[in-house]
Image (cartoon, rainbow, N blue to C red; front, side, top):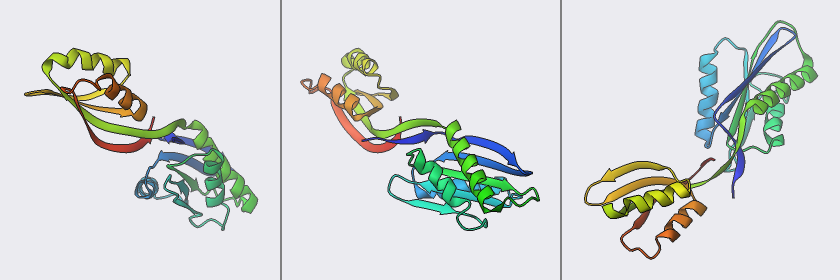
Length: 202
C-alpha cells in the first residue's frame, strides 16, 4: 500500500513586515536524511536568525522545532501543514531573516504556516510505493523476447551484462514484476532473482 510524499525539493519565499521567510521542502525517507536536510539549510544560510523545521517519516517518526521562536509559533504550524497535506517522508524547513519588526505570536504562526503551505504547494506530490530490484538471466536467444515483454510492461532495464548468459538488472513495482515472471513461468531457462525491495516515490 502506497502513501503520499513529494518528489525532489521545492521552495517558497515571501516577506512579512520586513522579515523574509523561505520555506523549503525535501523528500526524506529516513530521520537521518531529515536531519541532514535541516543541517544543509543551516550551513547554507548561517546568517538567518531561525531555521524552524518539522518532518514526518513513514516509520512513525515525527519531529518539530521552533528554533528559538516563541513556543508553538513555528514548529507546530509547519508540522500541521505537512499533516494537513497527508504527506510522509517529508521535511519542511522555514528560514526566517528577521527584519526588525516584531510579528507577535499570532503573526508568527500565520507566517510560518504560510511559508510551509506555500513550499508544499510548490512541491510535486506523488505516491511512494514498493519497488523490487531484480535480475533476469537467460540465453542469448531469448534476448528479444525478454526485452519485448519488459518494454510492454514499461519495466526499465537498468543494466545489461553479456557473458555465458545475458543478465538484465531491472526495477519494477510488484504487479509488473509478477506479470513479467508469469510471462516466462514455463520457461526454466529464464531465471529471476530478487536483489531487494525498497519504498520510493513513483
